[in-house]
Length: 489
Ligand SMILES: Cc1cc2nc3c(=O)[nH]c(=O)nc-3n(C[C@H](O)[C@H](O)[C@H](O)COP(=O)(O)OP(=O)(O)OC[C@H]3O[C@@H](n4cnc5c(N)ncnc54)[C@H](O)[C@@H]3O)c2cc1C
Image (cartoon, rainbow, N blue to C red; front, side):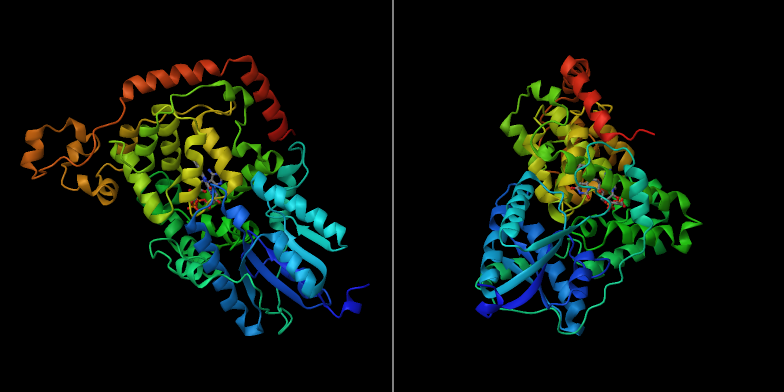
């Protein structure tokens, strides 16, 4: 019996994933151009949420980004639903109620978890004669085996015209379902910290405007400082990660901005990073095993001490190294820290505390408001020194502290136990005698002593990582990785 004979209304679907915006949106465009009315939704899927990379702050960001979309769409009575259910069950329910003809969404270069879900959904759609069109996201190409021609294609994509989405009044349907967000969950999601960057495309654009109008002029000079970077970096990462802005929108906006001529160095540095963004995701798209396995399989042979107490101290910003602790605490509170300090946190974990990178990767993933699997795992592994193709950089947290926060303002802000510590001791408070502390009115020493010694851990890490680079499997793997992920002209 055909769907129509059952009396079900024929519809299309827009399934929104990490593309929470209304403009430059191929899936919305396709649905608007197709003849049928359509339902648009984004999902908080229990099976995806259970995965240890996800945290409440991510869900809150999604929730508020959907709210932002709905504000924008209100003028055409458009509405994006946000439901709490696994995709398979949502589509099963909808196909009972409606005759689903086509589903439009973007390809997701996610973890194995979302990849598996998508494979199952593909079969499910196929079995029911539903056409699922997945659009390419941000120039990431599915099914590539090497990088030949990738860069050229990426620039072509970035320079192609933006999609100017238009919405017909009443074409997007609003329906009731049994898997709306519960009042309890809604209350949790509503409660969004003012310290986090606000979610949604309207805010993404505000950040981009303020960056190009003024904030970003010293971008290249301030990028490594944990405090200056908060102002001078673009801070568009959460908006890119959740697709509130497309890479193409940002690329074209910065490239064509009149201020670029006077601030070429700063603006070009960001344009380059937009390509890095996609370069890393392309890597992950080709090998999503990077979430749990070393990019270079030769590094899976390495063993670590993995002392759980040291790991806990790192996670909670209580290592006794002020810069490490300030960065971790700033990240816990605000969901963002700059690149250099992310690298230092990972290096401290893997090189100084001798922890397998997998011990900390989910912790940071949960804390980053801009968590993007395709960047996160390859970057984490690079900084952990397990790729075999990048220089292993073992950061000295005291040196970073003196160089990047000479006055100690960042440290004092995030490690209040040290707020009365004189500048000369701030980077190495353990050098302060009890008498010094007493003079400063620091009655009880609430800040911990360093949990490791820099000299011994530095020596150990250099020996361990530098010698392992010559292991035959590491070399063999390095050649494979270069072949796969490096362009050949
Ligand atoms: C261990 C580790 C984990 C990371 N995890 C993530 C992550 O989950 N999500 C994420 O977006 N970035 C991640 N990064 C990269 C980088 O730190 C952030 O993109 C950047 O700090 C975001 O701030 P911004 O938007 O102000 O960046 P800007 O410096 O203003 O750069 C603009 C954009 O370029 C891209 N970009 C910048 N630096 C990099 C880089 N090194 N690699 C790839 N893309 C880059 C981002 O999309 C960023 O929003 C990680 C870095 C490290 C060392």
